[in-house]
Length: 405
Image 1 (tube, rainbow, N blue to C red):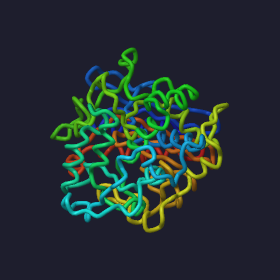
Image 2: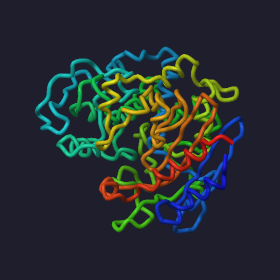
Image 3: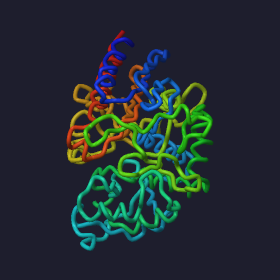
């Protein structure tokens, strides 16, 4: 791996004011190398370091999906089981006639939501930010912040179940709150807070001491600042994440946690998790999943039609290059795979985070690549072309870091 070339490439984005800084890691052939560029705190002028702690946003989803599949292996549920066994609130769901249509124009759900639907984002749940119709306001008004939320888990589940789905369960891929719901179902199944279950089953066994839904006060100095852009597109420090979905400081009394996007982590912590996908389900002497379960995760679960019609913010997700397994994107046609989703050979997996985090794990050569940054952009800014540099930086990192030595 050409460390100098990676550092030079990413430094261009930092120098141009398109990125505060980034922490990067490549593991190949049992050797791990890291590259840190720019600042973790642009006000205090603190540099990004290997142990800097970042919000990883939707990079949380593969961790929660893995935990769910560990419970699957324990016999707690089957993929085809309706979630109503653990969440009877979803027993009489209604489906909008149109995703952007009136909330009172609905039809009954043709089948119950299953665990497989949640793991593959085919539940009919969504995110408010993806819509302009009445469902967007209903999600915001009823559910509150996506990450930090004063509602209790039970109250959040009840309110989510009271909203109509945007599609029939199983019909299409719709990225949204499926993993958040899955995380709170894990709490009910395990009869324990999600944070405690994660710690016991994944974080402690793998030595992921810096990963969690909040940052310990003793680690505050290692935490990356919330970096984004002002109205003129200039790099700045934000008071909270875009959309107000999370507070700068999480209230200690909050019991709701976002399994879909709420975790903080570091390069080495996420490496400990991601190695599982490159090394057959086990990391050193710690086995999280059996090979057969890992194979299911890394196998596309979508139909050809679902692949071709999957969209995020109007853009295609999987029509070329990728499919979606159980919680991760899967490379199907390597020569067409968009590196922003994840690259690598056939069967490589990954899933990025909205705040500038990215990873891929490739079982073909046992490699793992991770890119962490705080690049928090409003949707309106994206439409203006503000904040897009991080995705170009990730593409450069993936391209250079994947080259043979």
